[in-house]
Image 1 (spheres, rainbow, N blue to C red):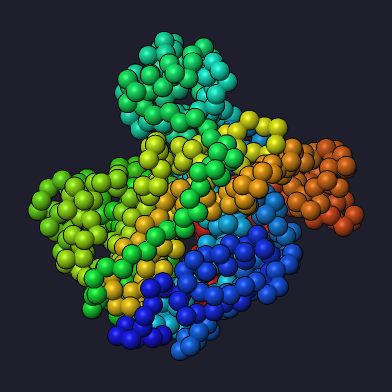
Image 2 (tube, rainbow, N blue to C red):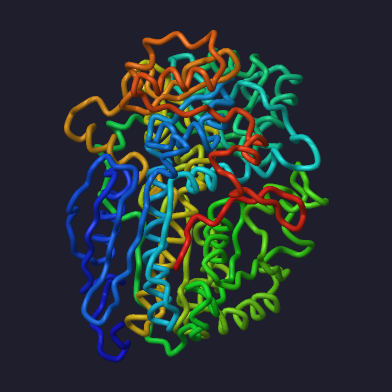
Length: 591
């Protein structure tokens, strides 16, 4: 790796080249991101094979090789549809509808591509620090399990869910037929919104809990009366109610609308700070590539905690900054050994320090901690870090070599943006239309698609920043967002919309087929042929055998996530942590 004193690098992969081959749903995204990070290269053999290969190298840089793909072909995992079926993605996404449904976007492939870039960047960072992993392996099967890890943890907890798992959920519909999302984190604002629309008091009260926990349960069985109320009011009146109450509403945008305003920005931004002497100490060659580095994480909900969790899996020491009394989400049901199973899925293995960021003495303490860290990562509300004196320039004053990472909702790219939460970003960016095939009303998925993909994107940005620091000697500010994650996920649909084509998938796309005792999901290329067979009187294994005898690929659909522990397709992959909570495998293997 070039020394910081001589390199002219302004992007982390400048001067490097790559070659890719394999399934284009995965490797084309990898190639796009490597080019954005400065590398040069073109696909040399994209095809429909189950696995792919990426090699990146350059002058003075030992080649790093990544292998990626759908999973083990013997397990029937040959494409996006079969991976979604096996890993539980279809089951969780379908909770709102009362049965498994496939996402009409290539979610597992997109997550796998970002994880592959993680592995390549981490290996290059390790190489610069004297750690020698040269080969990284990822797979869509692991990416799918990571996407449902919080739901899997809850399914294996010591107690039941805090809210019912039953069909139902937003979006709501106005009198004009306009679909919209509603968002608030405040029960008082929820009540005031519905009171302004003259909703029945019992429906208003009964609706809060499923609304509050829809992030956790992926469904929201509201009283029918709430949907009836919004259909009786104009969108103008609904907006007035939101403004008066402090809640927010967002009309669902189409993919065509998003394509028309899309600015083509990268999913993250990297900015060099002042030169800094600090870089991570080299670790023994047997260690993971980020061993010896320290990450301070001041994160909440999913996006930033997941990004830090991934950095921890790569070897960094992660220290969570929690409010006095600790993170209240530690107590979010269901629990394993008294600790929230969902919280453990994102935060196991992290250290924690309680800091009152409202107190000047504690802010000084946090600055002192940042002086000895490699990464500071947060997802506070826009402007809060500057208000607290904890923005990138503030912390660069005490640690010029710091990688300062902000994971936000909108990255200040949309001036009229609503609250930057997963479902609001889905609504505003056309994701709600993209995840449903033609002929179905748009509806943001209640599987937290963007929080998870945003967390992956945030970790990717940090890794890019760490590599840029190694190559330049500068501290780096990195910004990522849910908006960037949404644009990555919908990129193929946005390109179709920009060309004036129908951006949505055809009716019935990725709908699994019922069997006598469950469901099977045919591979996308086999779906039309598989639909000609009536499988409803066959047991699932017999239905799979029938399809395979006719040369058709399919996979059994996981409908109960607790069954994944014993699923032969993931034998030995899912374990339990020290608290008894289910834990999915690391998304990469290094050697």
